[in-house]
Image (cartoon, rainbow, N blue to C red; front, side, top):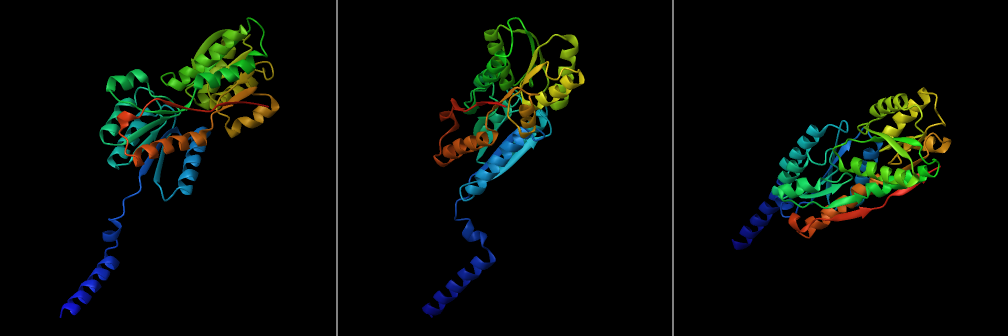
Length: 315
């Protein structure tokens, strides 16, 4: 009778496993779920970032799951905040974020941290004062944007004469990376003895970059060069320079080394750009986040800067 009971029990257990596989699966710890939240996926830079992240996850599929999201344009800050809130509700293990605004994203980042989510900042640094005000520490994994912009500015400076007039097209002015790139350009122009006659925002976008460049060329017809804070705005500036009949007469540099800029580097419409390795930036951020998750480090123990490389790209 006892043997029969044991057999019946074993059969029942096997039946339970077949009908309710989740009963067995529940015993296996779930893989960490990492959310990558980027800026505009209309920008080739962030598509490269997403592709790099997806390739990394595919190669490490046993280690973590990935959710990748982006916003419609560089100024869609409200929607980026909503995406982060959705990731909090989804109970992701870690959040790797390239914030559209260095200050506006800090409150929802704190909300994520309070929910027990590890947060790592990439691409555009969150504002230090805003982080301090909220009492949180978030590591930044990314390039020194000022250094990168100075590389392009120094290369341009060799083509300029003392007193030449130049203009800067800046990204979204509330972002730290836009501010740092402008500072890097200004550093280089000061060293070259050039005169920066205006700094205007092109919002990181092609169309806005085009409008701003056209306005600059109209207001300052003797400008000798334009320094664009990213390649999207440089693409817009190329069209404005052509429309003004000044191709070859107004020098231009960009930042990001997207594929669309490469033919223009080759034929001289763009003098130089800067590669900050978009696909690797996301991977670096993900690996930093996963290390913290697997080692069960508290967010408060994280912080500081992990500087990634930048390279000058010319013809």
